[in-house]
Length: 206
Image (tube, rainbow, N blue to C red; front, side, top):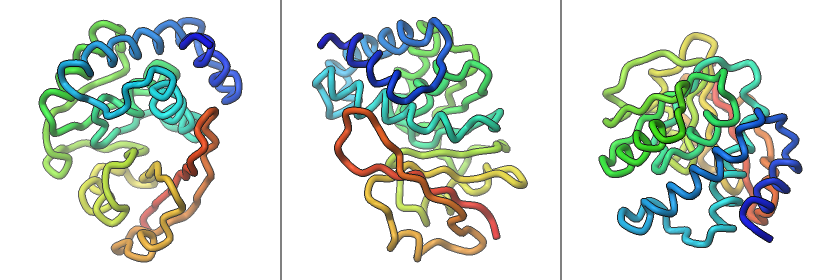
């Protein structure tokens, strides 16, 4: 199966209702990631098929939970995951990526330019020093939940949420959450082609 076929099949399974130009732009992002990865080691995954499942489809599994969100911050996104795939899939969603590593931030900036992502903004710096207010703030394998809440909680607007993408259900991490944060919802994330467990943990202020 070609990368395009793998992606098309996975997107069909997610039933996202993407814009017509989304699939070729996702494939263009994948090609850019592969090219930069050879020089800058942006991700440990080298296999193209695994990049589609572990990066693109995994990132897009968050999209159904953002239907009411207008602005999103993506913390510690590395190569722009999940922010860039989400920006492609949801052109009406304003996404700000916060990444401390210069080479990863440079890649995201180049992806923004080449893919013409007008709804995507990149900030290179530490999240605890970044200022802004967002309806939702997400992270994908950025940190333990307590650290995520401590470092990025100030970015969540009144009534907003922290959305943590996790592997196994993090029961022990939830127990260590600092006040005033609490888990209000959790969802299993079903990623086509990915056999590992994935969960979305929703945190809100009590």
